[in-house]
Image (cartoon, rainbow, N blue to C red; front, side, top):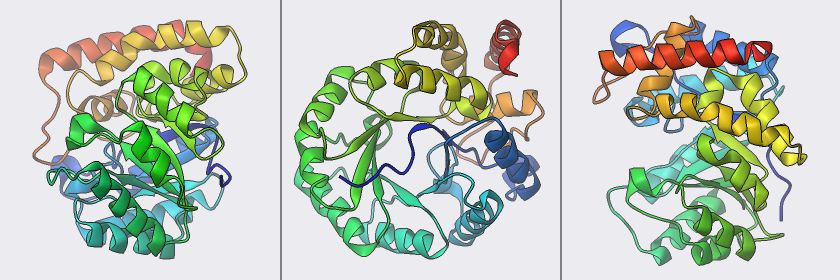
Length: 300
């Protein structure tokens, strides 16, 4: 098993846009990067689901990678989302990320095509063959319609470059079985903020977090507490659940971008087909974030 790209809390970074979603707001992106690193985050993940990668042009993706790698300047590892439902495109994206200085790639399962489990093994193998970077498989069947079964990932991680899986199936039983089958072969990252502690309890080594966009110190300390077996991890996980629920009141990243705007971290613009958060959900999000930050004020 290769060394982990990171251990602890990684943030699935939003991609801030100018008003109306017209262009990437690089000034806001730099502020977000510095906010994350100054608050103890262990890794940054660009161009994932939360980064709205599917609505960025190829040239914008290149600019975001180049900018992030430069500004982060090896202070923490940079993982780049390079997935596609075309294996050839995923290979091209991954090679480009490697050339631009990424430390690892996050590779989502092919969406829409809905390949078989054998197709998943072939797809991930083809990308892993094409790069020298560690590959983090991204299992999010609610988005893609494809689920990486535990036995399938066990075969996938026989490839030396497939080092980990980001598990966002939400199925703790499945994640436990994946952990059982891949002990000593691959690492597991939680992909759901609401179950960080349960995933770590069965062998996970960290989280790739949406909520950490707005509360990096809190979720970093929650993850560290869970990894070290501290009792406070239970209280911290439970206390965060109302915030996490509000951040997923609409499809990600609509609410977390709205929360970032409420906190003055960046604008809340998203790109179509995503739309700004609905008024009722925004009011609830503001209420919940205010309550959370007040109750956990030592983290902010």
